[in-house]
Length: 447
Image (cartoon, rainbow, N blue to C red):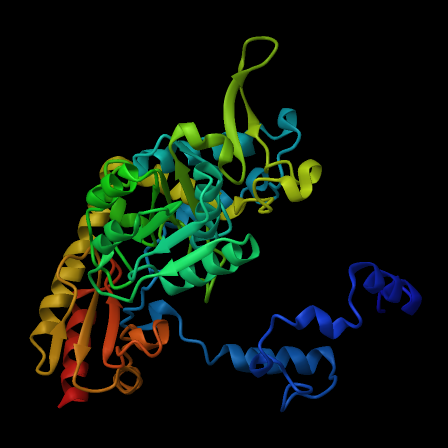
């Protein structure tokens, strides 16, 4: 049974009100090359539920899970071990059905989880305040850019050449809608410090460490240069586990630090969902998007939790709201909090150490292969390397050896002259046998 409550006259009146001549007008911003000229080729107009289920099951069997063999894909999404206890905790009934905690008197468990999450993220990043999560790292980055413009009353954002292109694309999309100018520096394996030369008149400069090529950079000089010109420094991370070893954004002088929390407690899941982390200095708290949970006491003096800052009051302020992100990744946030609690400070440091050791072993193994040049010299668990053959051909050949070798840089930066560059990540889930299999297979492919 179809549920279409609006009549043709209703829809015509709605389109007239917003100035649209037809439904096609809604797609004006979609490039013509991306639009379908008709139904999807090869798909029937309709089939029964049983046929659909069988067809989708057949398609799903083509998937290869990250645990099925040597797996070295990173670039913003990482394969880490998640204890079974995390899955058990998030499936408890008091957590599984949590959603918007607008009634604190009956949502104390949810609110306390948010409070603990914020505390953990602030400690991880070395920042003063954190919100109760965003959709993912890329939307957090975009919101940070817009927030910086509100704070500084400036209208230009500068992105480093090592910022993940998905984060850059999302930031450009949101900034364009807000009339903000975005400057993107040339893609570079090791070029984050170039931001120091572009701080004049900028609302903020956005640098990533480790960047999309895996390069670690101390952004303190960028923070100093930005602050001298009245700009803010936004630091981005896509691998949150790195914060168990490296200098934190707070220690580098970041004004806003954002990133992806998927690595802790959240599986790859063939593409999501993920959980965005957002932190800043306390003096900018009122300009921060999303929710902020706070601790208080009730009428009897007992400890309790409330939404100190709601979701920017979109339901009241509408177009004047600080942000139109009006929820948070609650279940992923819970998984992050459970896993982080189980790890503790020492556990996170140990996990980070295992990741770095695996990356060192991978870099050494690949560097020993004839025809390979390792490009990333300062790394955590991810490196970029160049081969004598096109990366797409190399990765396809590696797959025939049951090795998923990474991500080709030309996919991330088309036309940037990186056709032979591969970005590979090694986490604690990559065994010595996996790394040996990678090196052996790569040697055969390049022979």
